[in-house]
Amino acid sequence: MKFSTKLIRWHKTDGRKDLPWQQKKNPYKVWVSEIMLQQTQVSTVIPFYISFLKRFPNVKELAKSSEEDVMSFWSGLGYYSRARNLHKTSKLLVDKFNGKLPGSASALISLPGIGKSTAGAILSLGYDKRAPILDANVKRVLSRHEQIEGDLSKSSNIKKLWSISERLTPLDQCAIYNQAIMDLGALICKRSNPKCKRCPVKKDCLSFKKNLTKDIPKKVDKKSKPSKNVYWLIAIDKDENILLKKRNKEGVWAGLWSFPESSSKEKLRNEYQTLFKSKQKKLKSLPEINHSFSHFNLRAKPLLLNAENCMQHNSNSRKYKWIKKTRLKSLGVPSPVKRFLEK
DNA sequence: AACTCGTGGCT
DNA sequence: TAGCCAAGAGT
Image (cartoon, rainbow, N blue to C red; front, side):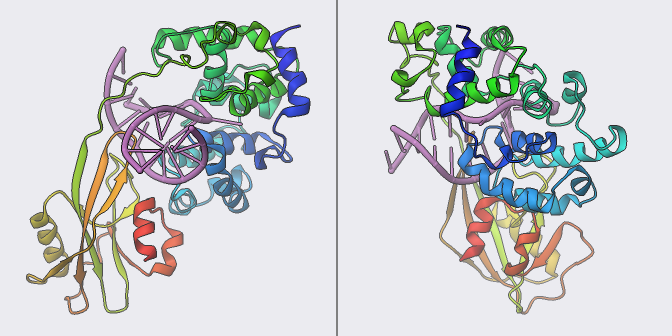
């Protein structure tokens, strides 16, 4: 029996069918969910997906919303360029694609935020067309099944995996097959302690036969993460408004609202003295905040500024905003900032 | 090709 | 429990 046939049969009894984006499925839901699921686990995505879809139920609603509104619903999910690209693409869809996700791989891939795998997911799950995918689940399943022992991030191995995925993807019932192979990766062919006994394709699996599931996919030793130390200015005025600053277009948390930040305490002093036209004031150190990114560790030292008696601040600048804690929901704010303000 | 881009679940 | 690593894409 064919690989795909076994998986499709297995899916009927053991596959996931209750995920929010699988209910009354359409290309828009598939698109949004796939973008959210990039490098992000299902359980993390679910609450974000539900509130996002309630607010932006279709392409048109998304396209006519402001970027700030969209970002506020992405706040805490990470990889914020995904949200910007989602919004950008929704406008493109309205302007040039009749308000719909296109049904060809080349057109999909031309859109911001949609690569080959996401395009494959939209085509198969959304349009029931034959299209291969290659996410982390599929990579793990196929690398074990075909015994690919090298570093899977190498382009030669990526190419190999795409070719295997293309070969195994069936013409018929491609949507179910793609869902099935992702489910197999998530539920059976897990990174650690895979449930090979329950696997529908274990008979042909080279890693199972040779007892290599522990070694495939190969673990590659990572470089040590650098640390970055910064100061955060926590300014609070007499009405308990908090000062936030829009971050640069480049770097982490691009374009999000955060505390004024600097690697030097003096620069931060200069910034608020210019901003408030105030002279030296005392800053109170608060307990530092540690936040771990995928590629560096951030240590932020919050400096509390009592801005009750400061002169009027320069409100011309669009870069700054005084905001009440209760209105934080309406802004794109990174997780640690939101957490900090909760207390 | 290698690096950037977040956050939280899992072990 | 500290580190690994996810329904990847852009540059």
